[in-house]
Length: 166
Image 1 (cartoon, rainbow, N blue to C red):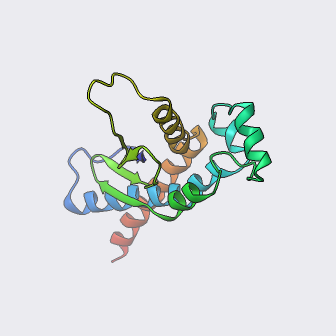
Image 2 (cartoon, rainbow, N blue to C red; image 1 turned 90 degrees about the horizontal axis):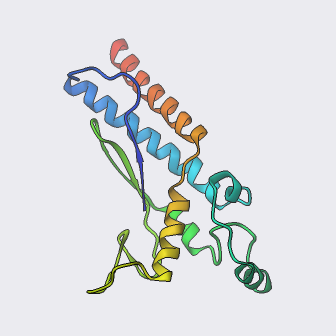
């Protein structure tokens, strides 16, 4: 599962090597902030309305309740939540922004790609469910996007200020 944090604001037309390093560090800081503060919100009870999750079937809700599972969205045993919130990889460049890669061992999913059999023209029901959950986990609200842009700008400005004081 991936979330992309892009470069925002006005950047120099032809950035120097130092500026490219600062941009990369700024987008890395924004991606790290997103993983530490925004991703855990996806597993809270209000997340279904905040991120627009598809409503689960009555049968699924009853099964979950009968087994004594938490009422939180995207949580049945808690294994996926633990994997997504504890592991991450940030790949950042000064031109393409940062990619936040989170790994989860969902059955039927390998490295963010589906195993599709020869002659299969559409996703199976299980694959569609996994894709729906993936989209729910990487969803971002407009407020989160604004916050990440602010974090990115602050991190870039800190790098510039640090360079000017040296």
